[in-house]
Image: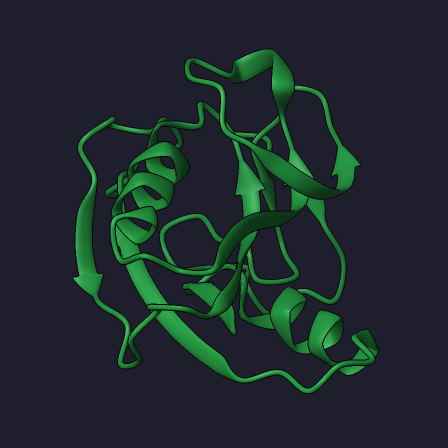
Length: 139
């Protein structure tokens, strides 16, 4: 089961799913810790929960970007409590220099320096998600 973290991971999840050579189903969660800022607030809210049970399933959380790790740590612990057969994390982008809590990331597309990036699903105030590339946002 591929669990896409909305909204940012949608484009990456779509591309990834086309390249996985195994049968896969999709489900989605929406979580928030940013509000309208470029800094994580650290307060995680689940805005949309999964439709499917995870019990006994092999689950891959698909994220757009990992920054402090606070949101993903919460999400990982939350999903682990639902007793999946396995639970792994895949992210398109990783900013290890910003990490405040370690999370068990199994698959990383690219490690990037500490810049706020947009495009390819990543946004700033709901803008720029549709860019077909990833760019650094300069205020």
